[in-house]
Length: 88
Image (cartoon, rainbow, N blue to C red; front, side, top):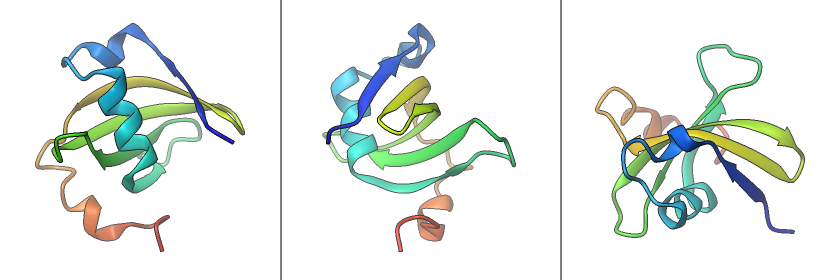
């Protein structure tokens, strides 16, 4: 079953498109709770051009995510790609 993605207007602040965000989410390299939060996740994946994106989202339910932040991945988060906690 395909995941439903809701987008908060702030997800587009850095000019990422819905298509690139969805591509990064479905082809992620890192996905884990952010900063010991109970409801915010950091995901790193590649957009359709192969550029890494950092995406922040909340889980709404088992089939739905709410993306509230997306931008080209900052150098701070690039090392997370090597961790791949949930991609083993």
